[in-house]
Length: 424
Image (cartoon, rainbow, N blue to C red):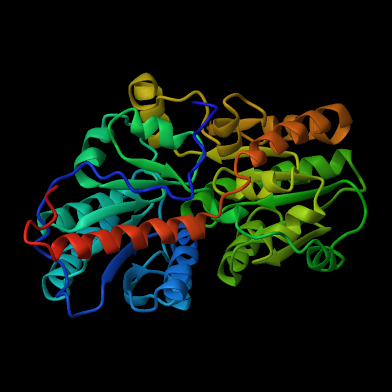
């Protein structure tokens, strides 16, 4: 992946390349209107910070959403709640049919509730059909969070080119990648880096946990499928590490009380909850601050760990169908040597990644023991992570994302009011 990107000019203008008449905008006398669609907890997170900023800066803009509780709290009018049972990888037939019904409802809603702009958030498999619905109604589309077509299925770039007008990217290398393939794109930063950490408060939370060293964090993810596949693996790695490091203590970062209940039930089915292993709910940053090492399921949380330059081992256990697909189509489907965010951004492996992983806990234990026992390897990884974090300095994803969406919306409204419409 490219290591460099162009700095964003504060006066940056959105480069649109399409020339379509806008036929399905709200009436000029009605408030400008946006539809956000997000189908995973991460999408709810990303969209909520931008929505909050839009509502603060432009309360006249009506924000509607198919989304989650954070989007609602940020000020969106949520038409339907989503994201409670998100999946990663190949969706099942039940999930496909569910999204087909959602798409039908969204299409009907758009017919009676014209909007000026559609903002799909992440989840390309779920959002591409909705982008198609928007385009059929001559509604502009601005993606928030780039579909990862640079990682696998690169032929999807042709679909994205047809279905988007602009992509707001969260990762540094994405802007150049998309622009080189004819898709307007801007790197806006990542919401994780929008606010400084309150280290004193995080330390206060951490004091309720074990105070001996080494300290290991287990981060099993948030999606039900990834938890069921990966938590037993992390748990077994933790048990093996405690047998060799008698003072080792641990903490599981659970995203919700429901997830905690699932984790405890899974542990009870495989020997019980280990002695000395705590749980904190919704306190990921505090767990990262407390730990010496994180065993983490691949995802956005790896950037949270990188932000505090804590060493980590990243894993993502895949199922037998995924293994078959990966084995048969590795060279056809995947276009990158790495799958985890710190390594992708660095451009080389700086963190041990077992992705996809089809084996047992032994490789996790081996990499973790190396970091626990080698201060030099810890220093090297932390220095590399610091370089990754530097790539996000000076950008506020919520501020830039909201600003570009507002500028796009204002241009749509202004052009629709001219006799020539939007064609330019």
